[in-house]
Image 1 (cartoon, helix red, strand yellow):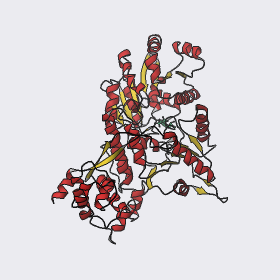
Image 2: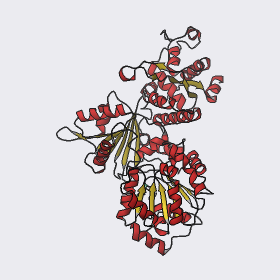
Image 3: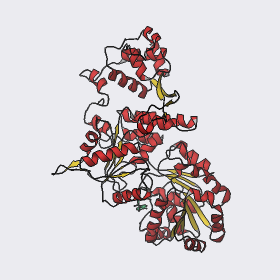
Image 4: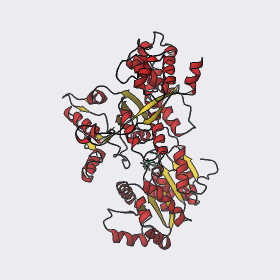
Length: 550
Ligand code: ADP
């Protein structure tokens, strides 16, 4: 047990057993529950599967009065209420979609329910009802589930969550418990400040998900070439996954494409995205949850509220936009603790799509932040060192230095099995000699030299210069540069990979430059809409400058 926390009493263990059927608390659960019972505020970041709900459900049954839980989705609340009813713990939810409203309100003010679930919008619009509840029954705790939604530095910002700061003002004596599975230190700070937590007990469990195997692969030419090799083929030639599988796609259109290709290949799958109506989405979710279909192809709309414990594989067909959304999405795999695999297929076009999403954001500061996250994600995909350590260190400075395991990610498997770690960059790898070493200094210097003279250029222009291109986009003064044509001996793919490698190793910098909007470039439906125009400008980092001086 953490220091200063007394062990749970016999009585606590009995209540735990009687209501929840568990024989003991997990160490961090008890620490949090103990603090809640002491009326302290809590900020909790707890890995998926650890048991967040018990942290507010237990105090709700142990104490008198009622616990109010703020949750982002009605479907999530329905699931939780059903689960509690099965345990004989009276609970309800308030909000649109509630059918027998008057009966629920009557029971609630009679003190029948131990737990009342509400949406953040309800708190904002109906605070009078909660004030009555406080007077008549007494509210013992406010629990804010998925608390990362209140921070725009997180990955699922909702403005209605931002208003939850009013709880502290309206109910100054009631302790607040904020819980989430994903929050960087910045997001944790934001949670504490928005909710005005008083001297909160902060608990962060490990971000390690040791049963997940992480891998990243470059996309092949076609969807089927990428996805089918991960599937099992039966005697009749049909493909199926080796367990429940979620395939995340960055857009509705790509989701539809993947579904239709997989179906043509004889694979059964369901689709889920925000363009479908509620009924269609529910049917798809239901079929997947109850194993009627083993593959669901979805956008991130298929997110919170998926409690399927035995998802064996999460595939990203297209790079995720940030390490947080990646971590949240792979978090849906292997909640039962059994080995599961997370595969990202990424390609050069993926960033462009995310840059478009970023360009539509309002605040400059937020755009910068999201762009930094996008770069971090791209670095993660291209790196040749342990992915598990990389993702853990994104969230926390404290990381357990366990030795590499060949079952944690593709890079560790390759390195431990003696494979080449450069398979991600075939053109650079081809330049390596037999000893697996090649000195790229002279090529790197040509790039640095070009970047120095060419501020705000993207990598394509740099490559035009290095290869001495005569295409229209080459400006006359570029042709006078000493490095114009100095890299003719290497092909375009080589230079592209080397520039990316130098960016990832921080010799070069990359920043988002917007160059206005262009109208009507698209064909068909997109015609006439603003087309996104921005690119990544390459610059020299301090290390790059220093290298030029040597
Ligand atoms: P989370 O929301 O953190 O992903 P849940 O609250 O859904 O996790 O709990 C995950 C699983 O762990 C559930 O099946 C739950 O019954 C189980 N669990 C939670 N607490 C305990 C405990 N103290 N002992 C045994 N099992 C537990």
